[in-house]
Length: 335
Image 1 (cartoon, rainbow, N blue to C red):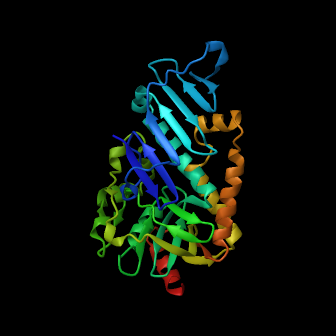
Image 2 (tube, helix red, strand yellow):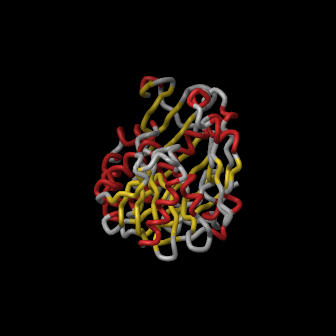
Image 3 (cartoon, rainbow, N blue to C red):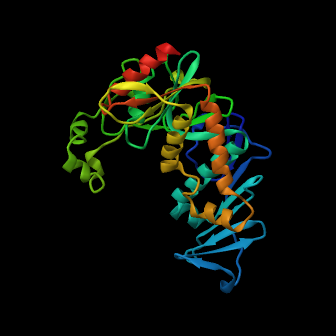
């Protein structure tokens, strides 16, 4: 089955496989999609001496595309057209055994197409008041989701995103409502019961250092709740009003910082999770073809820096998870 998506009319996608794109962006057939993902036999091949061998796979240029071949089990991937209409094709076996790899590649292609349009993804939660958007960047697993879901009430504060904020150079912010993962924490939100999590046992366990070290071995110790944001609390777009970076400290306050410093830190935490160089196929494409991935990183910084110029920028200086929503509520009243 072929699926089609349109991300706020900015970038369109056609795919033969299920992607982690929010269902609200599903649409009817798109004539000329910006990104096309297909599953097909990929009979392309060249003699082995013409391939570059590396870490169990081979790489070569096929016309205007890059081909990656594991040379076993018919595991092949083709990437082309990053300067125009992106083509990502893989064999059925690759889709089954390397689905996560395909998903990351598509998400990066989506980022690159947005950058070309003057927009960018940022690893951040995001809420909206009636007039302004508040972006909440943070390094992974430091309170971004808890803070975002705690703040939304569907009346004065609305949901834009939990993981990826979509920001334009002009300061416009758009919703990107992926499913949220509450983690092992108690989360109370009487206004939006769907966001509540009663993980009282794992909440206590998360505070025990020895137990935390065992998490990777025994993930069931920290059960997580997957949440789909209800449509009634989602706002489609708002203008950027404030940037609130979750940092650390015992002051329990929101301290103003410059837009340049907010840009620098936001980029660091974004690249920590969603860096443009995290996919070896994309890196090889940039290396072998006339596609400057480093220039896209520079352009992303330019977009973000311009968007942040007129925003109020703060760092939340607290080590108390429950303080973050309270500090942002104070900022909301000033916007």
